[in-house]
Amino acid sequence: MEVTEEMIKHVAILSRLEFKADELGEFTSQMGDIINMANQLAEVDTTGVAETAQVVDRDTTFRDDVPEHWQDRDTMMKNVPEKANGFIKVPVIIDKDDND
Amino acid sequence: MNYLKETIDSLNKQLASGELSAEKLTTDTVANIKATDKQLNAWITVYDAAKPAADLDFAKNRLAGIPIAIKDNIVIDGMRTTAASHILDNFVPVYDATVITKLRAAQATFVGKTNMDEFAMGSSTEHSYFGATHNPWNLDKVPGGSSGGSAAAVASGQVVAALGSDTGGSIRQPAAFNGIFGIKPTYGRVSRWGLIAFGSSLDQIGVMSKRVRDSAEVLNVISGYDEHDSTVSEKAVPDFTEFLDQDVKGLRVAVPREYMSDSVDAGVRTAVEHEIDVLRQAGAIINEVSLPHTKYVVPTYYIIASSEASSNLQRFDGIRYGYRAKDAKNLLDVYVKSRSEGFGEEVKRRIMLGSFTLSAGSYDAFFRQAAKVRTLICDDFDQIFADNDVILGPTTTTTAFGIGEEISDPLKMYNNDILTISANLAGLPAASVPAGLTGGMPVGLQIMAKRFDEGNVFKVADFIERQNKFYEAKPAGMED
Image (cartoon, rainbow over all chains, first blue to last red; front, top):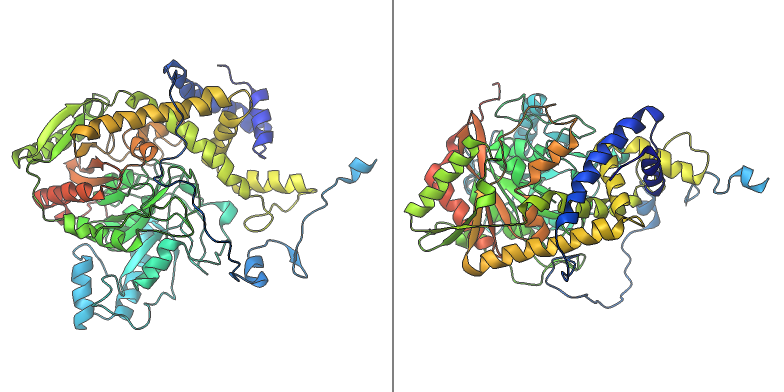
C-alpha cells in the first residue's frame, strides 16, 4: 500500500494536526512503514470470526440518576487558559472572511 | 533515605515502634530523590511540601506514612499532572484518581510524580517533554517505558514501591529492564478513573517494587469495584499476600515456543530457561505450547491502541485546560496549533495512525480486521489455559538498549512490545520478575495467568524471588 503526502495531509486534517513542509516527507515515509506493518493483518483468515472490542466481565451497567454537587465553577475553571468574568475566552468562531 | 534494603513490612515495623518518624521519612525521601535524581531524571515533579497523613494508624494501615511514587498520568488533586506532555505541562487536576483516593484512605504519602513516555506512548521514557530517564544499572541505557521513571525510582531505592500504568507492556518491560518486579493486573481489577486515557480497552494501573510482597500489599489497597469506572469488576478481591510462600509442586506451566525463538537474545533466553528449570526441579509440570498468532500481535496492538488513542486525545484542544497556542486567529486554528505545538512526535504518529485506521475506506481493512485478530489471540490463550495454570517466557527480547539507539526508528521501538502486548489484548494479569543478569543488565521473566488469577502470578513470582534472591543485587550504574 503506497502512502503519499496527500494521504498524510488528509489524515492530518482529520486529526486536527498540521506538519511543516520539511517535516512532511519524513513523516510520510515513517507512516508508510507503520501502515505497511499494520497491513500484515490482511493475510490472516478471519472469515466468521467475531470482533473483540473489550474484555470486561460486566454487561452495560446502570445506576440511579442522582444529582450531586461535585465541583463548583471556580474549581472547574481553574485550568482554563484564557477566561473573563467566569467565561472561557475563545477566538472568533466565524472567520471575518466568511462574511465577505 | 534509600529503600534498597527496605520493605513495606520493615518500614511499617520501624514506624510503629517509633524508631522512625513518618515526618523524617518523608523529608529524607524527598532529599534523597533530589540528590540522586540528577543522575536518573526519574521524576517530573517532586513535592517539597510533602507530608504524611494525619493520625497515622500503623496497626490498621500497612502503608501508613510510607511514600509511594505515582506515574505522572495518574491525577492527584492540586498536584501538577503532565503525562510528560507539553500540552499538559501547566495542568493541575481538581480531583483524585480512585487509586489515589484508596492510597489516601490507607494513609500512604505522596512525594511526587514520575517520568514517562508522553501519554504513555513509548518503550524507553525518551519520549518525555521533560527529558529521558536513565537506567540505574547503566546510565547510558534506557529504563524502558513507558513507566520508566517509576521503575528507575524503585530500582535505585528512591522509593519502596510505585504505581505505573500498562497499555502494552509499560509496567512489565521497564520492570524487566531495571531488575524489579512489576505487575499489570487483570483488566477490570483496578479502576482507571483518573488515569489519563491512552487505549481504554487496554490501559490498566499496576504496581512496581523490588520485592514481590510489596506489590501484593499495594495491589490489595488499590484493587476493587469503583462506581466511577464501569469496566471494574464486581468480583471480590482476594488478599494477594496469601499466595506468597507457597510451593509450585504440580503447577502447570506453559512455555510458548514463539516466546523462546531465536528472535530473543541468547543471554535472555538462557536466564529464563534457568528459572524454568528451577520450577521443574521444584515439581512444576512444564508444557511446551504454541501461540500461533504471536507474529500478528504488534500490528493488532498498534491499530487498536492508536485508534483508541486518536479518539481519547481529541479532548486536548486548548480550550478548557492545557496548552493554548498564542497566535491562533480562529477556533479551528486554536485546535490545530495547540495540538501541533503541544504534542510530541510520537504522540502525533499514534494519533495519525489511529485517525487513518478509523477513517472511511480503512476501517474494515484495519480496525475491524484487528478487532477480529484480537479474538483469535484471545482464543489462543483460552486454549492454553484449559490445561495450564500459567504461561512463562521472557518479558523482553533484549535487555535495556542504549539511549538514542532506537528513537529514530519507530518500528524497531514498537517491536520491543511483542512479548508483553498479548496480555493487554486479552486482558490477562501479567508480571515481570527478575531472572538474573546478562551482560551486566537485568533480565525479566514474564508470568501470565487467567483473567482474575493474579494469585498464580504472585505465587510463581514469589517462588522465583525466593530462589534467586535478585533483590540483594545493587544497581551498578549509580555513582555514590
